[in-house]
Length: 76
Image 1 (tube, one colour):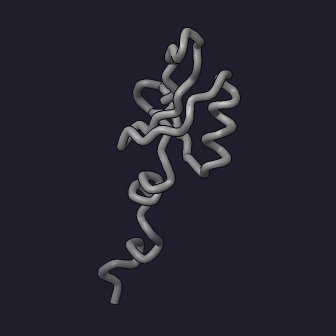
Image 2 (cartoon, rainbow, N blue to C red):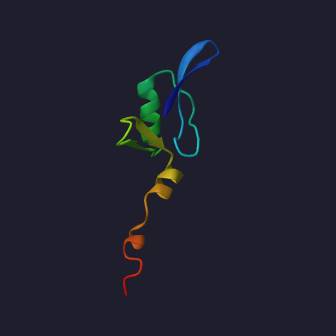
């Protein structure tokens, strides 16, 4: 998620991982926050039920995406 916060009396935007709560540095503009997430390899997806965007840090992205090896588990 991207939380809107007040920092030193100014409105800023704080990227937060929806799974673990990890954050990036706050940004002055919503679009800058989105750009920072792209630069740091965060992933985005739209929740099928709520329609809300979810944001995941790189380590949570890896945890949510199984490796290709798991596709072949149990095949002899």
